[in-house]
Image (cartoon, rainbow, N blue to C red; front, side, top):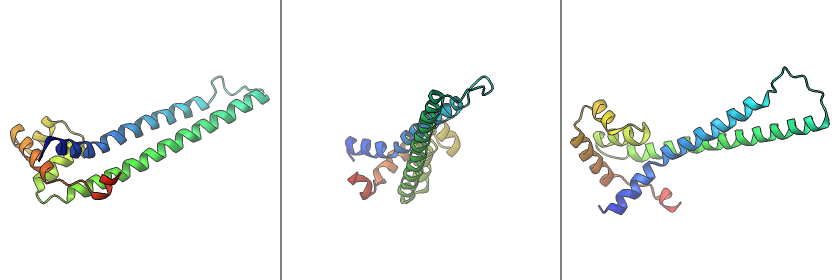
Length: 143
């Protein structure tokens, strides 16, 4: 297997980490906007037209942020399922375990070694073999 093919497979597998980070950022934005929705000072507002416009704009911003967050959450679930299904197609349990711990559970190499009771060298050998045997789904290659 050539290096470029190997990198494509890793890039495909790292998609879960990337979308998970995007979802987290969208969630933080959404939560921040929701917190800003509640005025400080006990709600003593006069209800002027300007304040109502501000309130309306804030609600629209919150709704847009919520939609972005929900979209990212859906994408995360979709990518997770796709990658898990692809890993499950590998014949060898050790290969499935190493790829799952690395790309789904997002563990560091040391933690994978401890968790799977394997040496550093053995984990990397299994990882290399797993990447060699791993196939990116045809549908994902078209995107």
